[in-house]
Length: 230
Image (cartoon, rainbow, N blue to C red; front, top):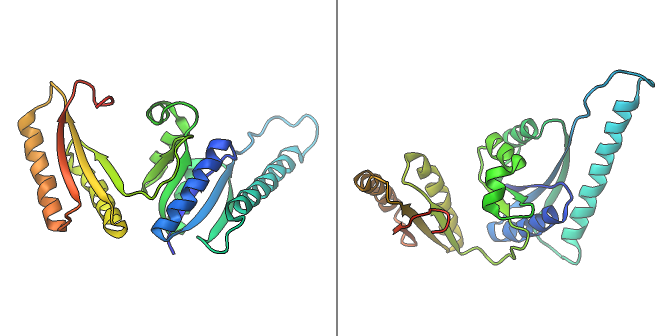
């Protein structure tokens, strides 16, 4: 069974993202893997004895496993059935750990919580998010702190019609085909863009969509001075 990988640091926003992922797993018929990385402790000169670093790392790992079990219990409380939930603790560099997980586990999607501030700010300045995206070859869903889950029926793909975005288009079109939702492919054309080039690129997208045979996926061109506001 495919799984949603839920990254957690046991904060309130991470717990909210885990609850969101639980509802999403029910919609997508996947399992969940709750995952926390224990950061490695750098080795320092030995002034007071030999076992301090190892013992401290073991304590952190044990605390991580206990917190993962608590989070799993919170997600399953009062439920007779639902997605299967596994837990795992990693140690060391988050990027390397995520790459290993994606290699060994059937991960469909990665879910993580956003800290305070907008999701756009988190994507621009959030080092953890950048590290996860860099390490991943799977979609990454960043859940805002106040976002309430409703069955996802409408998705928007923001694109400049690059050929690289066809991968995202294929993934999202499969998503809406399986859930009965709708996908809008949206391009914001700013004043300085070459309209002819975009028209040619858009034609490639439209031909791709024609070959998919989807009636619930549509392309839209909008004009705007600022892409973020539009």
